[in-house]
Image (cartoon, rainbow, N blue to C red; front, side, top):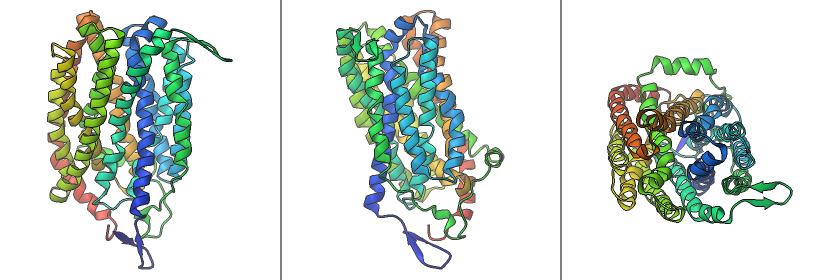
Length: 454
């Protein structure tokens, strides 16, 4: 598929094989991002013991610290992505967050670890706005859902690898105890884990340099140089269409609350609820990682295919996919917390994972499809701003607050997770239903600035 430029010639999309290579490179970066952000979930009891902190303080390391710059810095980076070289933004982002993940392993106080997690979030804020904007220029409209679906497989793949790798390696590190590293001194096992998962990211950063910056297709017809819409005008555009944009953003933030509010506490849920030894916990955490990878990848691929299929037939096809997926996700996330054995709990993570994975593709595709070209990366950044501000700040902390202040008993963590999961499912599902007609209106408006032949 191609589009016309000012001379009337056809400008083809990039070679499909190369375009899919770009997806794979971006997927590796996204996998790395989730390994780096989620490995901390396995280290909760030892970080708490080492730094002498509560569940609520720990929840800020799991979510709030990461979100500070991820949410606020992302919009500024997206403005650069709408006018500059997206490849270089991704490269520097990957390199920076990898270094900051390793820096978590050198933290000896709560404040130092908090600041290092802030740095991880700052680096990762460069990835999604730049990558999704870049993919839109590599793929025609009838293929973009599948491309974004494969890219967003990084969420489940990275989370799964974090638990498989951590579940296999961390019990051995704990058994060995503190280790003295040449030149840098003694390190606790939890500090070593951060170093081990952080430094390899520099290799992924170099791999990003093998991809090319594509032409910005929306500007070929007018022959105009890409000029990003000012940030305030972007916010004004979204505010005037808040039912289409912000309602969708807040509805899909339920995904982030489940992933970060429920997901981050799963290792502790297994340990506290079933009284598991470190070896038993490592076993079930690894199985959780396998389920996350297999069914997460299945979910995003199904979600990408469903997005392309339903969007051809309905103006709100993307949102319909999200709504159907939410029903599956809610069933799994609410019920796994109530299971009497770890086996049943882990099995109920299958529908939870499938249901949570599909909307990651459909949601991103929905946002890209109705975002004007001069502000697309900014809109994507604002979308992830809402997702992560809500998910990181509310998710882990909501669970911790219910545990610390309502139950006042760490052993009741499972019921805190159930309460949060049930509330999120009802609220966000209702917002998606409300969003349907307003998304259709935005989709009709989007067709007015779609380029000829696209």
